[in-house]
Length: 176
Image (cartoon, rainbow, N blue to C red):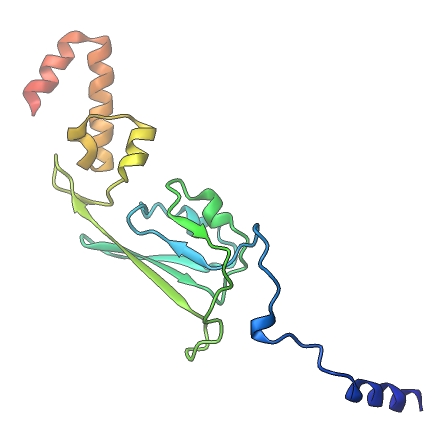
């Protein structure tokens, strides 16, 4: 009898489910929809490494580009990718993610393509570092901004040699 009383009581009450327009305000610390800025991305893979549910991955088209993939259906919204991105290319917006129930069945997929550029010294294809990252890390000359990682190491060691051995600066200048 008590169960029947509970069922009738629930049927006669108004609905307690919120309408989509009546949703509560999103807190300021909410980690919601992920945004990726391909112009700042260096395709270092840190975000994919720290992503426990493997929602972020990379694919490479050798010599042309690196593609960054995000699968929102796998994301736990922990924020580690945004926290550990060295160039702040990833951010979590305070918006509720959309597309969780896509027709594909695996959730919304985001993709950013990072184009490779030729090194200004050797011509090897590489992902260019953003100017802000280069200035913060090395403070290098304007000519070295388009260098690949190997040429940046070469230029750094040449600067170090010329600081200790002045004659080495003349030899390096002649190598170019």
